[in-house]
Image (cartoon, rainbow, N blue to C red; front, top):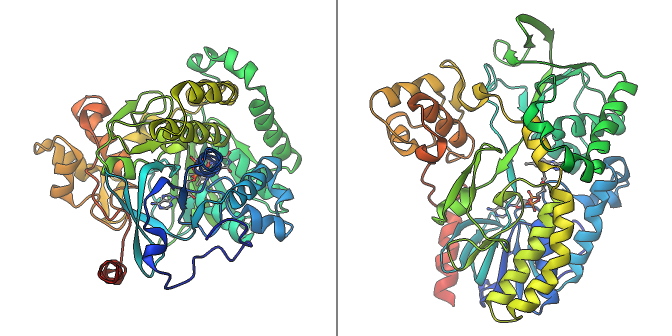
Length: 485
Ligand SMILES: Cc1cc2nc3c(=O)[nH]c(=O)nc-3n(C[C@H](O)[C@H](O)[C@H](O)COP(=O)(O)OP(=O)(O)OC[C@H]3O[C@@H](n4cnc5c(N)ncnc54)[C@H](O)[C@@H]3O)c2cc1C
């Protein structure tokens, strides 16, 4: 299970003994995106034994998803230079000598460094002296009227289909939302020879004063700005319609999406739609660190919870480290730097390098990180989510799994529920297959707005394993292997 595995053959052999991976490793990494891959490579360079667990079949994470396969199939160039940067990272990881558990989902992490993962048929236990949680971001939920209709999905989901199997949306599909990914994805579609019906841009029509305060960062991060302007030029050249200043979007149809409606000022407009792709930025995936009981803070700028961590990603739980977007949204290059810092921190904590050596090696990484992070304040202010996204109106479904509306959450609050866990008991909100991953931020937002307090005071759902649905057979296999051992 070491590197150099050919793309497409990354799955571990079925039926392999659990003992093959049950020796405690110095460093167990959960997540094969830029943060996890960079951390694994750095840790191996420092002589640590490393296992990387990732639910995808190939290294790359969200941004570099299927990069090796796309390159082999000749599709990578159309996905851009930034995407191809992931190729070098994936290759360095393949060569680094880490044990690689591809297509494995970590469904439980213990505070002592034990990780339970499944490949979909059987679970196994992997033990680590330090565990790096590098599970990335999730898209912020976009609860608008009609968002549960078939035909409505997120931009991220559509991008997964494009990167993994080259699927393009048809020309009747609209993109609605804000944030760099909406423009990036539309440009990606155009570059691949596709078209969309148009973009409904919900970013503020003029640059807010809070963003202007970050102009210094914009100058330092001019490459990112130039990339954004490049997307706009590409879309103009392809004659893709872009409506700016959109303040509200609705999906309409009887049993599936038929029309999209949007409001600019007081004017409502409507157009036929075969699909609607929503996106309002990304937030840290905190399911693992919340389940572990790590301390979390509310980030008032990014409007999300993030685990409390030091400069090397160490949390308040000794064995647990975080890196990448799950520790706070910074983008791929920042995630890569944070991964390397996390590995340095782990090596020092395990006594493999001295704190002085750690700091010396960290210095250039920190400088690189600051360069990539410089534009973040500007982007966060420019794309800060509208209040009605965080706390939608009464008739909008908040919990898709259980069909619970924002109105029912407010009703529960009026009956005395003060937090998400009480609301869960009253309404079943968060009890479905996604275990509150999708509705959690909305539930917190609705309660905070109803009570007139900060989300930090409301808190989040209590997360319990399994982190994602698991079949009983997968659990039973673990017991069998324990007996065999
Ligand atoms: C849907 C989506 C699309 C994006 N597209 C772009 C883009 O096109 N361009 C761009 O610049 N940025 C994009 N971003 C942001 C970008 O993904 C991040 O900035 C960057 O990838 C962060 O790297 P990371 O290593 O922290 O996490 P990721 O790259 O997200 O990697 C995390 C990895 O952990 C895996 N994982 C999660 N949970 C588990 C688990 N329990 N067990 C095992 N594995 C697990 C995930 O499958 C993933 O492979 C996107 C984000 C999202 C959510």
